[in-house]
Image (cartoon, rainbow, N blue to C red; front, side, top):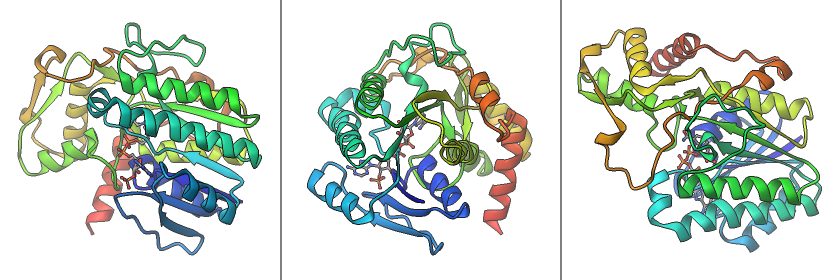
Length: 299
Ligand SMILES: NC(=O)c1ccc[n+]([C@@H]2O[C@H](COP(=O)([O-])OP(=O)(O)OC[C@H]3O[C@@H](n4cnc5c(N)ncnc54)[C@H](OP(=O)(O)O)[C@@H]3O)[C@@H](O)[C@H]2O)c1
């Protein structure tokens, strides 16, 4: 099967390409400003600016994907708040164009969305809970969800939370913790922000299973266990044998963010857990996997 993956230079995109490749898919991996390469014969990496719709259409016509996994986005929450035009163009208009051509060519579109569609006042959100974003990033992602849902006969929306792990992409919490704590540097971690940190490799396995099983026209929450950032940092430090006294607890009120953050955007994954056969890792298991990957990559 031919799968086109956007955002292949992001943390979830890169791992999803690897997982698809290992399952024998022919993959076209799209990046833009951060070049990525894949040694696998069944993967081709291609630079493509998704805001250039004519070029996108040309690539679609040439590659003729059967599946589109759309992960490219302006994912920096504060940047989205400051540069709303850029956020709208990438998160909404690009998604709209991809939805339009996916519908035209009868391509299944999997759209990667976020826990930030919720306001975070309650936590442990189910797929049936009503979204209410508190920042512009969450709003653009929610609008894109609605576009995908309304324009396509075949789609899947996957919502996830606080993706972490090794590989390319913007610095993520897990990677930053490893880098700083391994050098004996101090890190600050929030005590009062709860999420469901999700290991990129587990998310990739879930996404590929969803595709292989042919699940359609649904929203699924795929994420790790609920925890606050400070406790997560402590667990990571313990797992890697780093000095936990370097982790300083801080509070959301101490940070001058441009965009408001949900207080508790953790996701209830019980529905997806019942539907899929992949293992939903505990935090402990996720950190074991991350540690293994880290030491293997350092060899
Ligand atoms: N980070 C999280 O914790 C989190 C949580 C939930 C959901 N998500 C979702 O996961 C996905 C990846 O997010 P991320 O936070 O990992 O973001 P990221 O590291 O900023 O990655 C964004 C991706 O979009 C690509 N991209 C941006 N503009 C593009 C353009 N004009 N044309 C083609 N590609 C373009 C980037 O390519 P280049 O870098 O090569 O330019 C990169 O691969 C997003 O859909 C995001 O909403 C993230």
